[in-house]
Length: 168
Image 1 (tube, one colour):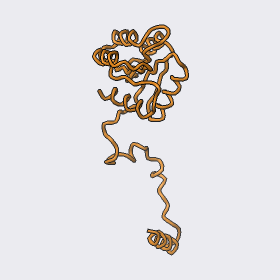
Image 2 (image 1 turned 90 degrees about the horizontal axis):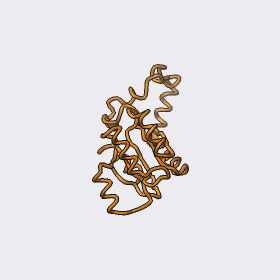
Image 3 (image 1 turned 30 degrees about the vertical axis):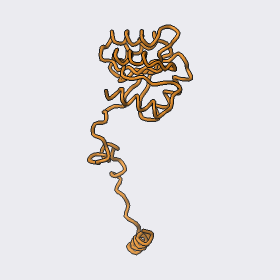
Image 4 (image 1 turned 135 degrees about the vertical axis):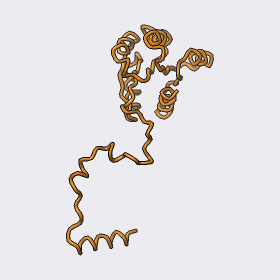
């Protein structure tokens, strides 16, 4: 491998300067660079998917926001159920998934889910909770919640649950 590089370098020096790239090559969009690439999933969404994060704990909202934004998702954040419902009404067509805490000060995640379903029966909801009760989790899934993610968050687990909820 090293010998080939050395040979190519010598040949470039013999024929003058190394070949220059045409400026047009630098101006192509990333989309054009990826067209036809078998490693690119053609089923990827045309726009970044948007997640509405609902939790009354600021630190958890920021933690989830950083985790998902690093992986290409857009986010909106609400620190109360009321704020979440207002944001959902205003951005309903942009929001692909709502991640809501189960226990909050003004309303619980059940109420948020019920009210979101009144706005949009097809809303995708992922519930986050620190309480691990198999019966509650079963009831949530039966009620149409797309998934449950347990606190404390682990990045990979959260991202897998987000992907599953979006794909379901």
